[in-house]
Length: 237
Image 1 (cartoon, one colour):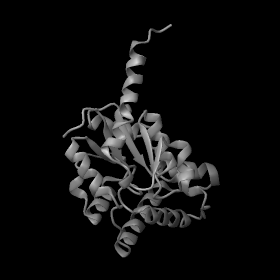
Image 2 (cartoon, one colour):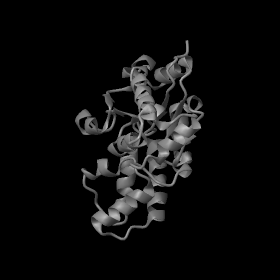
Image 3 (cartoon, one colour):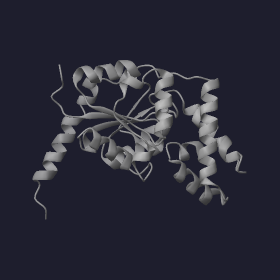
Image 4 (tube, one colour):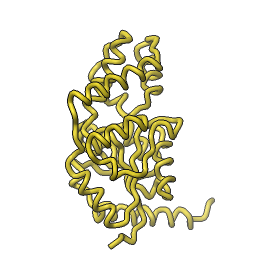
């Protein structure tokens, strides 16, 4: 039976749906190393979830290095696909079950990732879940990367919802910042970073998608709707 509470769910891809974040990290580190910059381990959280353009812009500021964006993107993509073929990965535990519940309950959902559509579809095909995600927002669909909220505003529009009506599931700090900036319910999943790292930026932190259900998410949105009604009916000074 479909829920009477109107909300949707937006999933990040790497590190939320598919266990690929470690390969992404290796690929981007190597692609940068080939341009003469050795990254620190603490840089991972800073750059995780960003677009290639934003990664290069931030690294130019941090390291003062002349980095080639086109070369970085090309090499990172080549390395990623090469590594993924050598070390195939799967979908995370609970993904299929949670999506099946959303479908049964009539909850709209989308996948939104900073990655290219080519990479997203590659990941979904490799893990056997491509058919589960007909609504996709990729890095080609927006201009400003995380932590800017544009990616999630685009995804919410595809679901005919306001971002404040969406639970947004992320594995990175930049993703959670973007989720909150969009006004959504920011849910961190500890597939990439530990709970203590994600908690300051999240409304809810879970260990896996098995900890989520429509009923659990539903409990957050009546309060959100009440705040929206109150804001709309409160006279301006």
